[in-house]
Length: 140
Ligand SMILES: [Zn+2]
Ligand SMILES: [Zn+2]
Image 1 (cartoon, helix red, strand yellow):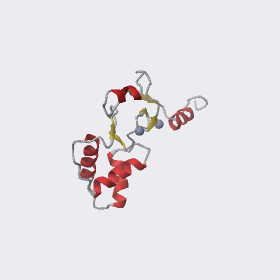
Image 2: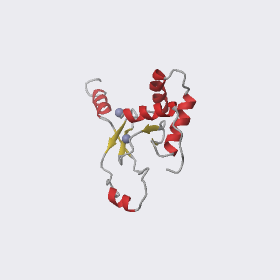
Image 3: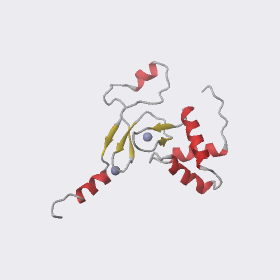
Image 4: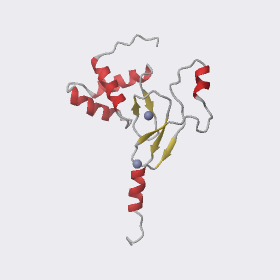
């Protein structure tokens, strides 16, 4: 890493929060949980630090068109599948989906991989259940 990133207490707490959860929170969600431990923190500070953590490769952004940016503190190679209904994001460990990318092939290049952009979308199990309930049959 070329930047000598000074780890402030706030930034450390935001990063810890990201690493602890698996829900891929939005900035607002990170703010809500960090605020419980550090009541004086502002949403702006959370945004700024999330941005910085992503730019320095310590966290990942999950961009999904039409919904708020989500953040991931898990830097291991993995993909995400997003629910088109509730916005939930889950991890997919296999990285060789369509591209045939192999982790060792990436390593050969000497690059530290930050992002693989394959967008997977679907209906999460919970949303499938509620779709079933809303099925019109029998309801007239
Ligand atoms: Zn869902
Ligand atoms: Zn993830």
